[in-house]
Image 1 (cartoon, rainbow, N blue to C red):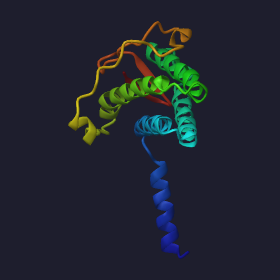
Image 2 (image 1 turned 90 degrees about the horizontal axis):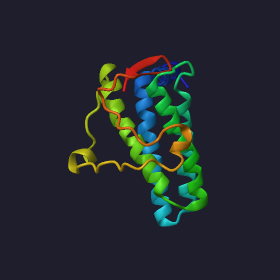
Image 3 (image 1 turned 180 degrees about the vertical axis):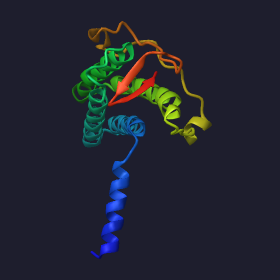
Image 4 (image 1 turned 30 degrees about the horizontal axis):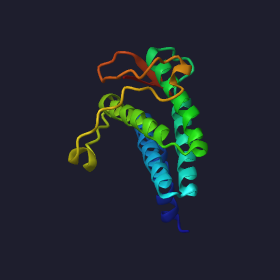
Length: 180
């Protein structure tokens, strides 16, 4: 490889690793939603391999989101996120055994709502706005169900709490403080 190509490859690699932490969390939310959709699609089609691979990837991403919350953060928002992520991490692996797509759908609804909140608060605060997807502009979103995912009460959450962009609880994710 000549020097110019090596320098270009290095610069591209360096640029990719300099992702803003807020954008990185957003990318994780987007990717977990894709894998949950693919896992659910694999279930409908009877494709055990696709279901398993995508569930596994979704679980890994939710684990990373959970690990991204600072241990020292004792805020209400951080406790809520830890509880929600933990409940999702308990329920998603059960899907491989039970074959019940309900846990996937419920996890998808919660994570999609968190993604929306992240876009409306953290992304805007960091100057990283994102526009609506073609799906969002084409069809209205259904209202989230009020029932908590199975197992969520085990983690100290009586039921889902509607988070709004104006919530004042601060959540620190690897040094990035945002209001959710």
